[in-house]
Image 1: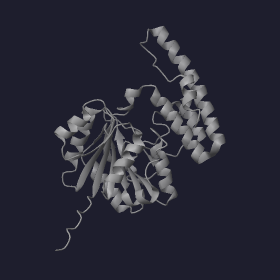
Image 2: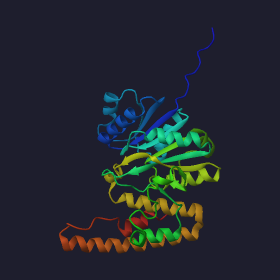
Image 3: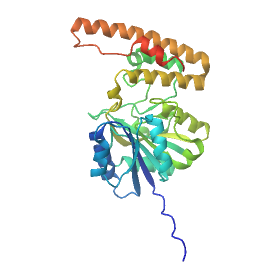
Image 4: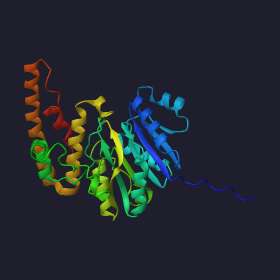
Length: 311
């Protein structure tokens, strides 16, 4: 008797990383299920050591979802890599829990990938909850660009989306440097050649690094403006408040050390510390003058120096 053949891999494996965002996770999965009814797909969720009822909710309401439980928070890169290793889809859709795919979004991403055989990553057209455009694709970081961001001069001179581009819907699908990580379609063939996300980035900038490595291996990064995805933004990191700023800056310095060398990394570190000091003083004064009605808590220079010590 011949041995039974292995089941065919699905066209698409949807990968979602969750950390204490139970309600958003349910909405995210529901949106995928509604959108992908005629597609051959499966869903993988990595729970990053949540302390809410996310795992119980998944087992109760979404028994078809492949659940991977991690007792510790592996970070964005580590958790996504774990699910990508277990899944088998020809394409992988990496989706944040706070990202809701609009009708036609997944098909629009797949269409760009299918018509562009060297597309290793395809990114979506992100929207704020009110329907306005959210930064979706950007050029690779430079030291001058980082100065304009940290000083806020970039937004004052070039608009709120700086350093990102506008929606550019009229241009249609286009090649770009990198796309935002809230919704990424990844070709498995590219993943197998380039490798997964760099787990040295706990949070932030890992998609920039990945897109850069894709390009270095001859793969292309595309932006699909027809793939509309609502992204709430910062849903899980809001639970960590100011530490997310330290994570962002640490990742940025690490990226610069990798791709631009020690000198530029050190210069960036100095700029970050200086502008953080100014921001800390400014927000502190504003909070005192207004009884905490204005201004916000920011990462302190002391905490930032600790975070940046070994990067």
